[in-house]
Length: 458
Ligand code: G3I
Image (cartoon, rainbow, N blue to C red):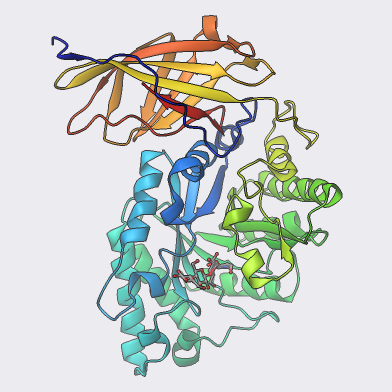
């Protein structure tokens, strides 16, 4: 096919992203995959673009919508559904080769008013609940890997929480919710999920007994989620043993909402301790064969629920509010086997990258593009992986000077042997042929070894 337009390669102004990149930083999703677990984050759907989207896609291989799949969001008025935010999260995950944890189907909190304040007979309430489970799970059938079917069913003393569902229907509401979810998507792993069950104690014992009862009744439960909303200096020493005793019941386990909050201001000493504790929690999961993965409840301090709910506390996540990796991030990476620079928790921000993306020629179904990766830092890059997400359905068909693969809309370019090393100030260039239809919008964000790069389009 003849080229119909040769676009000039005049570079437009550099668009700097907010986050200076640390090109030598490890990629949590790759390290986790090599260890046989996933590493996930809760996300806010409206933020999934720019640097937030780039880091989410580059670093994590599972995402959980923090609010978008809750009953109050998806069915604010009875029979009237709002799937926009949930759809955005699932679409983003598929474009970035990520799993989704669906959160959550039946919960005493964030219910719509019509449900929370409505009066229903027991039979009607049971049908409302199972219909809701069926509708939501069916909508995303085949696209959700894990569902938090029932969330936070317990009191602190391990007895059943007096929710609307429990008060009217008794404990059988849990079995009914799981059975409806299994019928709607037999492939999804079905979890029960709670907080303050991370270490052994009365609440964890209550969960243990509940799971035993559900298993004895043949309820289709696959896993137990431990939220992991922890406090600096108070990570339970029994975490690993506790995960193991649940695994021994014949269920999988996961840390589903990890954050470790501290009293502000964050000091170097507190951040160093937090690093040790993120590492310990990750290690606890790795030590339990049936622990499937860890999800942090927001990866950046600018997307954390903590300051809203615990005034004076915060800094609970692995990235600061400016998308800089904190020592905690390196603690996670170390637990996952990373041994690179920065492991001391005090990385020197002397690395950075800028990407120039240039379409050289384009014809009715295809195009040729060149990509130049520049090391704008002062430390050498030794081996690189560049990731981006296609905005309009493009795909790479053939590449040179790099190996390019694609999963969904996410493209991954890995250096060739001859251009693996990029000296400070130096650059590496590769090219490819791609296919497009409908539109050929340039990618808006790139990550180099998991860190966001400044972007220039030409
Ligand atoms: O969207 C509205 C916005 O329009 C309004 O201006 C603003 C004013 O307060 O509120 C916004 O909604 C907030 C919502 O988060 C989205 O940001 C709600 O007030 C707020 O209550 C809600 O908090 C969520 C919380 O669950 C509710 O209990 C947090 O984001 C979410 O992270 C948190 O997640 C829970 C898990 O689902 C279960 N485990 C505990 C965890 C932490 O509480």
